[in-house]
Length: 145
Figure 1 (cartoon, one colour):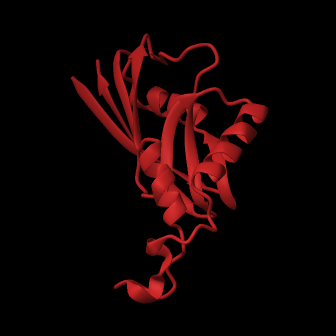
Figure 2 (cartoon, helix red, strand yellow):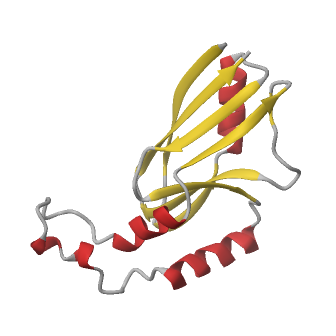
Figure 3 (cartoon, rainbow, N blue to C red):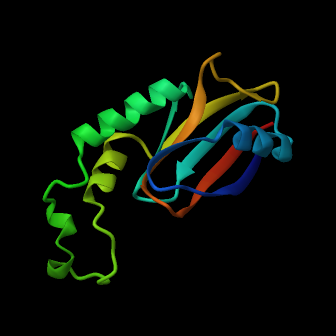
């Protein structure tokens, strides 16, 4: 069995942004030389999330609206009481981002068959930026033959 690891780095935009990682993961598969196995992807941050779903603009708008409704940024979260916590005074007020990340997922596993990600016709691997703008890293481990 071969094991390949790399990180995909991207700069995200303001607020809640959804980025399509599928092309970057396809490139990592190509670089790995592995044709059959698993692609494991993990977010390296507590305020981002990963999922597999459709990358369609109107659906993405619906997802952003839904997530903002279930964890609005302006709610009075205890985590945002920076002055009461043992942390840096410049830490962002981002409790809503942490909550959304926990409701979503920090990792995905995608089968690799004949050198291709085994995704459905409309499926893409999506990174949810919940607290941007920031530079983000996604770990990509590919295992197989």
